Length: 575
Image (cartoon, rainbow, N blue to C red; front, side, top):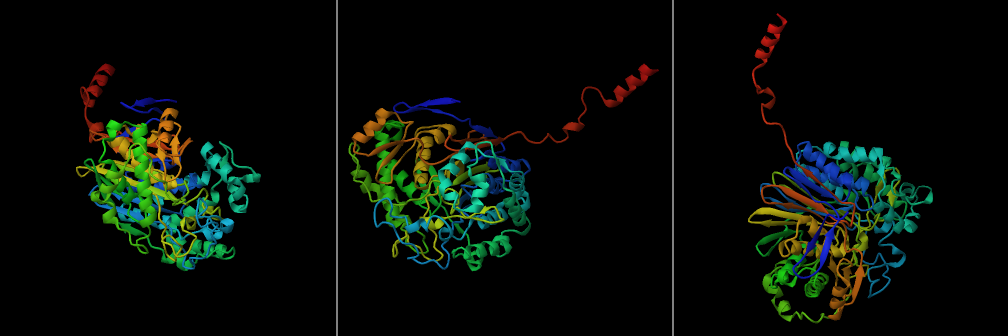
């Protein structure tokens, strides 16, 4: 159903499809209605945004199993009401037994550069990295939450115990992967019972996973990292050619990092630092755009799209050259985010002609999830979490209901390169859980799934809000564009005449239905309210918390007359 339309002074007109929400006490936005229900339940029970975020993520591991799980990876951007700001790096690491030549590359250039023979780096037991999600979620809750682990996990356990209805979105992802899922009996038994992909409305049985979650709620993360669940996983992997050991699990550590801070037209932009590419390269791109009158160019015009594409090319060129795990690669962060760094590039931009194409870069999968949550006190969480590709490695450990990631797929299978596999190494990610401030106060938080399309989509969201003055709902649903230096993708929400004008500048344009995944946002509005929005590209739902408790003493205030007078009148009538 069309809710509203947006028209720029010059450029593309588009219509929004979903409704935003507002709340005075908190807003929860996730990419599944039950994920949002779990988070809002924590806020209604008196918890804060951190409690809500962790509850939502556990719930999403039940109802969005193709996207996220406790055996996954992610980055979480947390801004506390007291001003403390941290990025929790819970990304997966390469097992200790990894070697640079453990995969045989398919090609030394071109689109298959990151693929390996027999897909060993992306499917099955050798594609699995040492997980960080469960430890990151529980440590974040312990550090800044107010509720117990068992309390925040209760909705997820409830959803897993009773199961849930498959959505059209889940059905489509199963169909997309069914040829591979069929190769893994345990996974197929859940998502393709009787050999057929779950249909929309079918019951999804997560009872095995309910037992796993209940054990974790009772025993904590060590049930996986130093306990019986880890033993079960490692034994199963070792019998099937996997290399993750109990020592790998026991040795895993999350990292609390300081966010990258950029500035754009009076706003402060906070994002994850390397090994994530987002904070550095979003700041770099905004530094370029700040030199142009974006509002005057208009939203969705050939010139504004051309400028965005040129800026994206610059960011991807620098990402491919510099960004990696800072424990293994020196990343010149201060230079890349300096406004002086982009001056020469700005001077060289030709608004009529596309710059030369780049060699292909990263090949990250598009399939992830994101939550954005804020409470009335000013605590804000923006978290992007994944098991990498759809259904991760496709491996589900029997009896656990737990899908395992395939984060090894993101390493360069060629040895002796910056992104080659090394023991303990974290891969570079495009995850962009961002928080934007102004005058020391939060303005909005935003993020989405979508692989290499994530941080360029967040860039466009920031521009939509700051330059084009869009609402939260318009921001997340606005048509997007993308390139990493070769083909240019433009959503079909951009008119064909505009796409043709962009192509006339020398870009190889491909119209697509969607770029990236379901973006969600929470915005701090004037007057102390919050707004939240999710877009049409996923099953996203926003929940706003309003209302509050009764005024103190309200039930004990006398109304007209007194109860004694009433009793006297009755007595008199009886006489």
